[in-house]
Length: 93
Image (cartoon, rainbow, N blue to C red):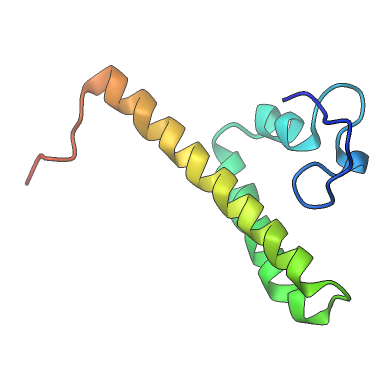
């Protein structure tokens, strides 16, 4: 993901998008399977502290951003598995 020109404190904070790569993309490339745990921890962090911040809505929007990123990550995994193994959701044991 290329860093955006306009500073968006929730979706593309300028201080997280230096050097042509976003911080979240760098973390994802280093974390592998642990990336989902990182996302879950970030969700918890923003939900935990929002009532104690001067801009609580902004922290809730950040939590939502991480939830959306987690959903996209899980969806990518499911799509990759379905492509490799076929749709296994209808199998009953």
